[in-house]
Each structure stands twice: as structure tokens, then as C-alpha cells.
Amino acid sequence: MEKSVDPVLPLKLRADDRNLRSIARRNTIGKILSSSYSDAISNLAFKVCDKVLTYRQMKDEYVELSHQQQKLDNVDITLEETGYEGRGQELAVALSYRQEIEDDLQYKNGSFSGVLHDAQIRLIGQVIENDTSIKTVVNFGASYAYVDHILAGLHAGVHFFGLDRSTATKTLNEISFGVHDNLTFTADDVFEFLDKHPSQGSAILLHSRTATFITRQHITGLYELAHRSGYKYIVGIEPFGISRLTCEPYEFSLQDERSVVYLGGFCIHNYPHLLKRSGYTIRHLEVLTTSNADPDHRQLAFIASA
Ligand SMILES: C[S@@+](CC[C@H](N)C(=O)[O-])C[C@H]1O[C@@H](n2cnc3c(N)ncnc32)[C@H](O)[C@@H]1O
Image (cartoon, rainbow, N blue to C red; front, side, top):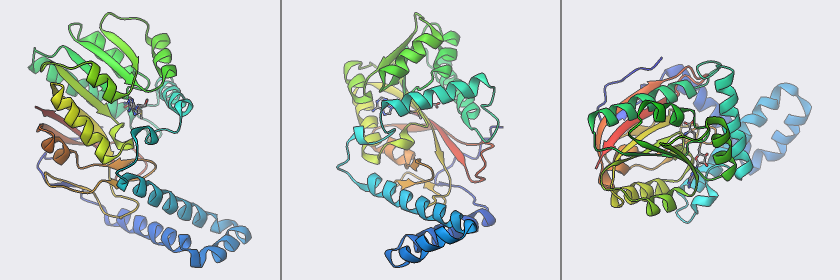
């Protein structure tokens, strides 16, 4: 299921031509239909013909992607305005992850959760085993803390923090996983948490499908704060592929690149560059494939150290 690709930068997805063409076609139709000129015509078409309903989806998708890109480019946006809309949605997502695990569907129906879980357990385990000074792991955005619970069981000498914004997620995790000496669930903002919990070179900051929901200036600010606060490692696993807005496969490099929307609420940051400019060096980089229905869907997994 997981596959390592030559970890050399710059790193660009070798896109499948058919996949690229179909993404470009969908994008062009969405763009045309979302222009004000064609609005009246397309609205009429939506009403008269069932088959044309898919055009409405293309239009809505294009409008939503453009809106997300504007948000991503807006340097004045607050962290609170990013991510899930409200704490209720956060709990709903955590419950859906729990359901997926209970139904044994992490690797099925296009889910990529299982690939993420395996990679987190493997990469965090790798860092802990190679560096005995590690005493703390902070998971920025644990959601349903299945992985944190497994990791805490495997590494008794390390303290794990599962960090989320909502107290409801914290309560769900406490009910689901009980109380452990080396696992704490916390409802706090990640910036405030790092301020309150500096480390002296003995901590890992982990994020998995979380940075994809926040803006470039926030993930950069977080990496800079982690570095100032003495967090020795950053481990990340985040989605990427062909942007449904630019129709280009994303290229990771050590150069400054714009963050772009990918699809369905995800965005892609140039993690190698953002880590480097915050004082971290990439030690391990790999591309994970999943059985997601979108053939271009990948996860970038990395370990960086200060
Ligand atoms: C998609 S979920 C994480 C999924 C999980 N890591 C996984 O791989 O299954 C994103 C989580 O990030 C948390 N989050 C987003 N912004 C945050 C912030 N500023 N501080 C703390 N947690 C935050 C949300 O509370 C949410 O639970």
C-alpha cells in the first residue's frame, strides 16, 4: 500500500495525461460557467436538463476552489478563520474517523486514513528509536486519537499530547482511550500550547492532514515558533496532487513557492522550503500512495530536524 519514491528535491508528481486532461476539462467548464456572462444561461440549463446537473457541480466546485485560494492568499486571515467551521464540525469529523476504524474501513472505499496511521507510527517510532533524548511528542490536530493511543503504548518513556481546538474532541478521546500516564488530550490552540510548553531539544511536533487546512503564514509561524521553543523535530504527513484550480501537479522544492488549493478543502504548502526557512533540515522525505479514488492523490511524509 505505501510506496517510497526517490526523495530528491525538487519533487514533482509524474501526472497521468488522462487524469490531467479530465481535471483541466472540468476546470475550464467550471470557470466558464462561473463567469457572470454565462450565469443566466447556465442557471436555465440546470433547471431544464438533469444531465446538465453535473455542470452545476463543476461550477460550484470552481467557485469554492477560487474562494479557498483567495483565503489562502489573504495574509490578514486569522487562524481561527481557517480549518473546520465550528467545534461541532470538528467533533463530527473525529466521530467519523472513529466509525471508519470501528468498521475496519481505513484502507477501503478510497480512505487514506490507514496509510496515514501506519506512516505516523513508523516515522515517530523511527525518530524515537534513533534519538533517545526524545521525551515528548505533540500531535497538532490529533482528532480521533487512535494513533496517539497506539504510540503511547509502544513508547512508555515518551509523553504524548493529542492537541485539538475543541473540548468535545478532548472528551471523546478521554472516553474512548481512558487515562494513561504518558498520554494527555488537550483542547488548546497550538500556538498557545507551544508557548506554554517549550522544549530543550527533546520534543517532536507532529501534524497529519492538519497543515493542509491552514494558511501558509500560519504553518510558517508555527514552524518558527517550534524552532524558537526548542522542538527538535517536525514530522508531517500531508496530502498533495494536481491542483483542481491551477491544473498543475505541485512541485516541492527548497525555493519559495506559492501555496495552492488542491481539492475538497485541502491546500498544498511547499513544506521543504517553509521548514528550511524556519531553521529545520529535511532528514527524510517520501511520497505515499493511497487507494483514493483520485488517481493523483498522494501524501508527502517528512522528518525534519533543527
Ligand atoms: C483533520 S483533523 C486531524 C486529523 C488527524 N491528524 C488524522 O490524521 O487523522 C484536524 C484537527 O486539527 C485541529 N486544529 C486545527 N487548528 C488548530 C489549532 N490552531 N490548534 C489546535 N488544533 C487545531 C482541529 O481541532 C482538528 O481536530
